[in-house]
Length: 107
Image (cartoon, rainbow, N blue to C red; front, side):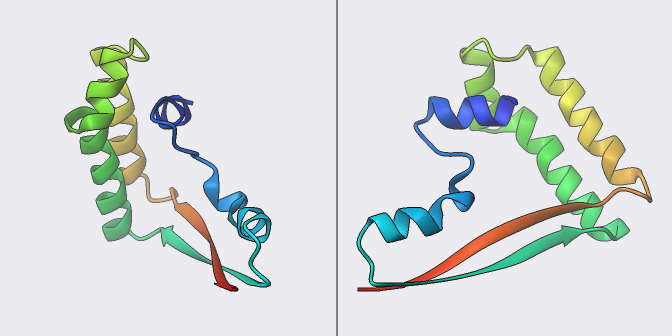
């Protein structure tokens, strides 16, 4: 929920991937070829990397500054989110996938 709020506040679309095909067609391209790919974090090494990345990001980047300045989260809430990412990354049953919509457009 926090990620979606922060993205919208910056006039970004957190769900752009699900709309990119439609946007390309509406833009007038005569040919739009769609495909997809995924990232998957399921090994100890990849979970630690992904979980650690987000654990640090939620505390040490513009995301944290924006969340705090906008009153969307407290420092304690951000620390709890960070702790949850680290706990997730240590769980041998945990995994995370990120789907990607891809398009090739032709005039």
